[in-house]
Length: 104
Image 1: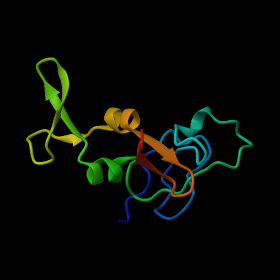
Image 2: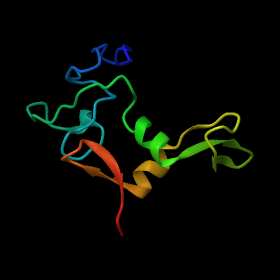
Image 3: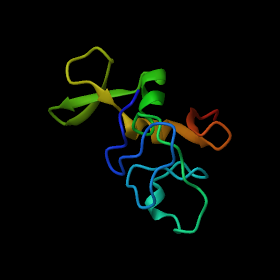
Image 4: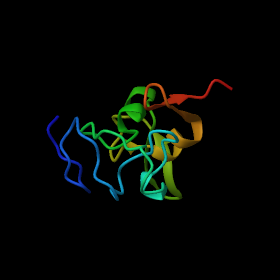
């Protein structure tokens, strides 16, 4: 994938720019713009939004319904990665730099 980061324009395989709203903290997996600017916790842009690949792998999708977003299948019309479920049902793995399913 050759898409640059939509916020800081970095190319895949390189570190996000400081202040990038899409970058994640390497230690917590949360949005990096809340980290102290001198922290060395920057992550690499993969060409995908953070968590997108995990949502696909785990089958976490949602679509807009009459009462807000509801779980759905990947091939349902309007299906999008369900990032809320990802952060609810998974935890950040510092070693692999990705969200993994909780074991508890």
